[in-house]
Image (cartoon, rainbow, N blue to C red):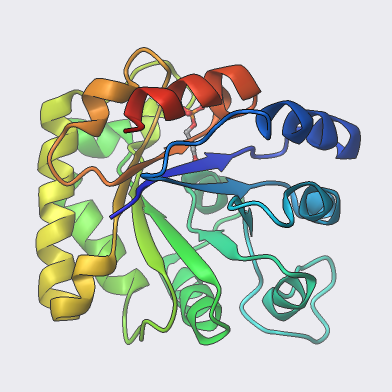
Length: 247
Ligand code: 13P
C-alpha cells in the first residue's frame, strides 16, 4: 500500500504563492510508494487544479458543508467541489472542532455526504493535552471514532488521521510509543467496524512532522502516512519528508 503524504496548508497562501509552490514542487521526482494529497484553501483550488492536472497529486478541500446546496450563506458545497475536479476532503480537523465548534454529529453528516459523493476522505481525530494528562486519550479517540463513523458506508477511499492536538504546530511531536499506542487502538476499532474493508484504510499521524523526524515516525507500526501542516508549506521541506520515507 502507498505511504500517504497529505499536506494541510490551513489558511495559508494565495493564488500566486500556490502557483509558485507547484512550479517548484512539480520538479521533484516522487518515489513510487508515495501518494500525495494537498488540502489547500478552497478559494485557490481552481489555481491549484490548473497546476496539478495531469500529475498524480490529489487535491482536497479542508472542509465542506453537509448539504449539497441551499440557503447556507458562506458555505462550500461538496458537490460543487466534485464538479470542479477536486478529489478529496479533510473532515474534523481539530481547528474546525475548536474554532468552528464542529461536533461529532455534524462531522458524521459531513463524512456520510463526502463518501456518498465519492470524495476521497481523511477524517481527523485527536486528544487535547488536558485529556491526555487526565488519562482520557483512549476514551476520547474511541468516542470520536464511534460517533464520527456512525452508520457510515464507505464508497470511496477513506483514511483516518491521528493528530494529538498538543502536537499541532507546537514542535512537540508525539513519542513513537504514544503514536504506536494510538494507532493500534484505531486499527483495532477499524477492524471491528469495517471488517475486511478496514485493510484499505490508512492511519496517518499528524503533529509537528518535519524532515528530521519523518523517517523514524514512518517506521512506527500502523503508521500509513502523515498529515503535515507547517512543513508542507515549503516545497523543499515537503520534498525532504517525501524522500525520507520514499523507497
Ligand atoms: P503541524 O505539522 O504544523 O504541526 O500541523 C499539523 C496539522 O495540523 C496538520 O493537519
